Length: 232
Image (cartoon, rainbow, N blue to C red; front, side):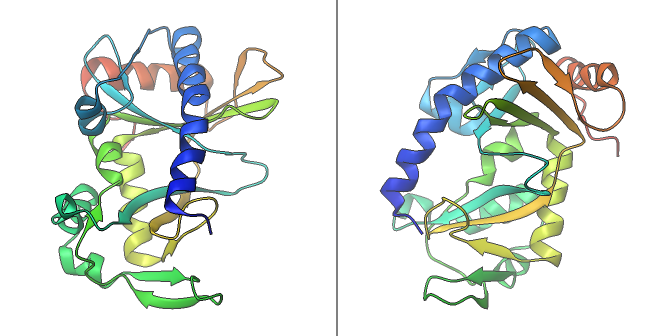
């Protein structure tokens, strides 16, 4: 486990390189130039990147690697002591499209006492709905910008929200997983169908499902026509 402050410090250290790499990816591969969102309210409500069409993307710096990790970790929410988060549990439920009490009854692996135990999520008083921005943005981008071989996963909104909802309802949330702090809850979901790799600073190569050009066209469709990259 890491402390809350340490968790935020580590996250800030990944944010800049991830945003730079994501911006470069969209410019070179997708052919659009996103604006990095610096306004706090706009960033929280919509995402880290704003595209020329007015659509938004959320960017996460994370040590993803499809050869090492067969699943992707998504932060769902965080228990806080901030009264501003009094309606956070309902906002999480709304964001992923489930009932409040289904979220409260969801299973959580909790190992804060030094041994894992399966408990119910419950109804904590104050919850920061981390998933809110993912559920608001048209695309979510996970970037590993800290290793010689860079990886990038791109999820459409419907795809990632569906994966999170299914994980919450049928699997377990995990508390304090990886390098997140012990107030953070997340789930493991399938890898995105659209993935790219850049080796030793070279160009991006498509490594996901199907044909790379089709993936580019799907992304452009999302950003231009307000349709989701999910095929459902």
